[in-house]
Amino acid sequence: MKTELWYIGKTSFDYLETGINLYTQRIKKYIPFEVQLIPDVKNAKNLSKQEIKNREGALIIKKIEKGTLLILLDENGKQFNSINFAKDVEKMLQLSHKKIVFLIGGAYGFSKEVYTRADRKISLSNMTFSHQMVRLFFVEQFYRAQTILKNEPYHHQ
Image (tube, rainbow, N blue to C red; front, side):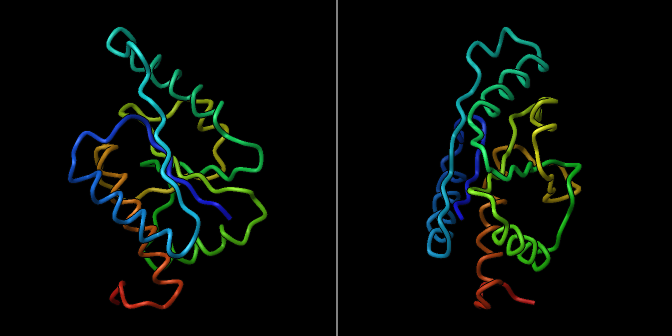
């Protein structure tokens, strides 16, 4: 099954982009994995936060293919430790969906339509992180999950 990470807007910092690329390449050794950039909303400076979320949501909804398992990275989602996240990923990979998409929203979160379409929500922490840093944190944890599932020595217990 194909897995993807989608996020809104370019990554502003080279160190984050370097880390995201590093873990993306590592993940690809285990499963098909891609990172998809959803462009920032144009003229966002002239829009309210809600209008930005709505426009981002419309872009996301339009992009989702039938048969996609959509998982939001959301502060109110279910939290896991790394081992339980790996077990959950393993269960997801056994489902009959064509694709799994993990979605990181923009700076203001998700629209109601995206929440309605989502199949699940997960949270990386009770803490709040910038949506750009979450990109790196997620790919590292997704890579860690792959190594746990393969019983490789990356994760130390």
